[in-house]
Length: 250
Image (tube, rainbow, N blue to C red; front, side, top):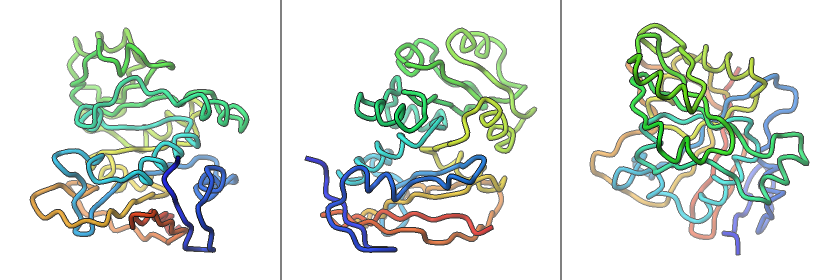
């Protein structure tokens, strides 16, 4: 049975079915493109437990995590997150694939990875079992041998000379027809994209736990990037997770 999720705001709804959860997270139809970030954090701001964000989220967070991929043309992830969270070949299940095709999406989303150093194994399941050829975004100065090896299993695109340009990543994805961009981290990706002003939305699960320790925040960058956000919705799980949706204030 799916983990129970209730809607608290902007209206009340009890024990939402998948379609109601999906409707609550629908990107604006009028937007030519949309870039959404999805994260979980503890009450005291920890973005991980034992080095993994997945250690913080409960069943409801995992349910919404999977449902959010249905709205994505492309799932954008940093190479560090791929390694720490144990990503393999990203594939949605049959029900999700059927929903996607019924709503005008390709059956499977594209996986796009961000890696300035190209510290990725071309023989890993991330590439070997991917249902759609992945994209790897890097910089022009990346190691040529690593770039050549990855080019055999993915489209490798340089977006910047020494520093990766988030606006160029978004523009390239949109140019490929991948307009609904869903990012699952990590903090470096979020921070750099936030600083570049290309984040439209944050879906944030607030886990009912205090962690202390030295866990990283969900966004990291070398310069501040104050960004006004407006609350769009609040869901609550049976075990007191709050699932919050924020949209950038234009």
